Length: 401
Image 1 (cartoon, rainbow, N blue to C red):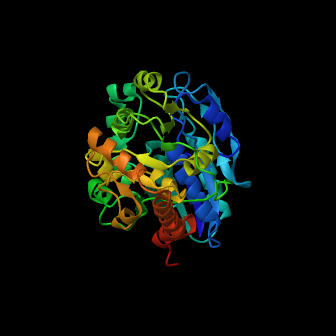
Image 2 (image 1 turned 90 degrees about the vertical axis):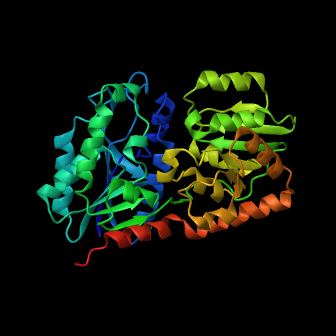
Image 3 (image 1 turned 60 degrees about the horizontal axis):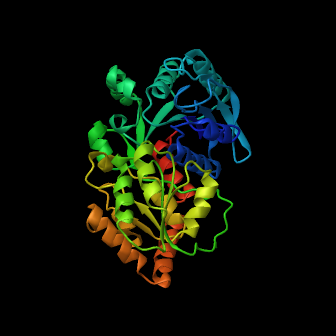
């Protein structure tokens, strides 16, 4: 099975530079999900994989300190498996490479024989256009779309919205959508929302890939420590978590926050008034994974009442659970029932309710916390690993000959 993965992932040759030069918009969740997919594809002997990546970064100068993204080989875990296309990283200039992409796809089609599928990561207009145009030129190519988020809920530049460009792109995306042959979604309600019930699809709420070099056993921090890793903004419930923690007056409690912050003034107010709250900013993924093993509990405060939570499943849930550290979160509508026995769930999502539940969980014996965390870890490693989850996608796109 020949697969061309049309992605927005970062080559291993680019990741460190992109992370250090990004002011905002480094795609941690998207990068981790795509790397997990790549890991699963490479572990499957029937797949002949090629990657065509257009790395997704915020534009120069406000979002990123790089004005020219250079072409690079696409390298993943020391495997050179495709090409990462460069561009001028300025607004309205960062997708002017139609002919180069078309040429790459045509050459891939010429040198491969047998069944072929282009898998597009995310509902990104430009990538979808390239895939649909390729199918018009080569009708035997099958198209599969990965849908991690719905376009109306994706973060975007405020001017992009003000100028009406988001509305225009969503209209184009909804048209392109129906040219695909099959779909991979993160939550069942996405299917009805997108009106694609008549075509084949599979729900893959997440993929865990253990590419970390971190040891399974890492000594815990001495204080009772809560950690959140991800985008720090109000819509994700993070400031409710911070306020809930701030109301707990226990000196041996700590709260560690990692990830891009979109409301620094608000965060600085808490870190300056409460020395137990620590913001570590953007740190490498491997460091995040080590830290997740060291803390007492991991928290995802995303509220279940937000409309977008019906159509997404936070990728951090799988990564949290795989660490072996117990997880406390809201019972999201997109959460499969099989997860719930392995999690601590907020009974009340108000700030006071979050405060009480944090205190309750941190009062449990270490043996109970360890047992809960290890059960979650075993569940993820056995049932949500890259090889297992990718088989679902391969079954979806399997050709009958």
